[in-house]
Image 1 (cartoon, rainbow, N blue to C red):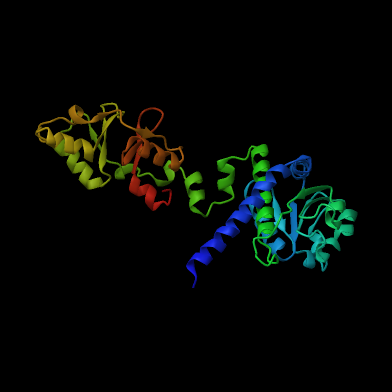
Image 2 (image 1 turned 90 degrees about the vertical axis):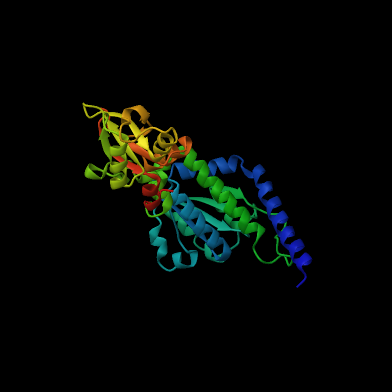
Length: 323
C-alpha cells in the first residue's frame, strides 16, 4: 500500500469538494430567494423527490427540513408513478433533485405535478435541463468536476446538493423564528431532547431526600445530614424555613483546615450565605451551565418565596443524560 499516494488522493478529493461548496456562495441569488418564498408559503408539506444518489441526498434534506420547522417527507419518484403521487396535494411544494435535470423518473411526473398545481423547486446541476425549465424556481448546484478521478461517481455534486439543502433548511429555520425548544420537540428521544426539554423538577431530590439543617445547628450535625442524604451538601434554613445558605463538602474541608471544632462551631458561621440556587421550572441544562460557571457540584432548588423545594447535584444530571 502506497501510503503517500493514498493521502494525496484523499486530500485531492477534499480540496475538490471544498471548491465545489465554495462556488455555491454565488448561487444564493434571486432563484434561491424565490425557492425560500415558496417553501415559507407552503400550506401543506414539502415533498422531496430524487433518484439514486440524489434520492439519498433528498431523503436527508427532507429529514433536516422536518426537524427544523418545515414539515417535509421524501417520495421516491418511481413509486410516485405507481400510486404514491396520491401523497402529493395542491397545497404542497415539491423539491426535486437531479444533477442532470434529465432523470426520467422525475421528469415523467412533472406534467402531473403541474396538473395538481403544486409549486416545483428544482435543484440541478444543469440550468437548461428539462427539470430546471419546468420548475417554478431553480437552484443551481452545478460543480466544475466530480472528486471521482473517473468523473463518474457522484461526489462533489451530491455534496453541493446536500450543502444547498442545508442552506435552505437553516434559512427557513431562522426566518420562521424556530427555537431550541421547537427543535427539542422534534427530538425528544435523544440526548439533545433531554437537554432541552428536561426541567429541574424532573430530576431534583424532593421531600425527605433533601438535606437541610437549621441555622443554629453545629457543623457536626450538618455532617451527619450530608452523610445520610449523600448529595455532598446541605441547605441551611432560618427559623422561618427560608434558605439562608448552603454548606458543601468544600465548606467542610475549609472548616477543618481552619482548625474549628465541628462540635461547637455553628453552621451559620461557616456556610456559604445564600449560595447558588435554581428554580424547579428551569431547564436542567441551565443547572449544568450554572454549575460549570461557578465550579460547583450541586444546587439547591428554591421556590419564589425563598422556601427550599429540592436539591440536585452533578451526578443527577449525568444519570438523566443531560450532560
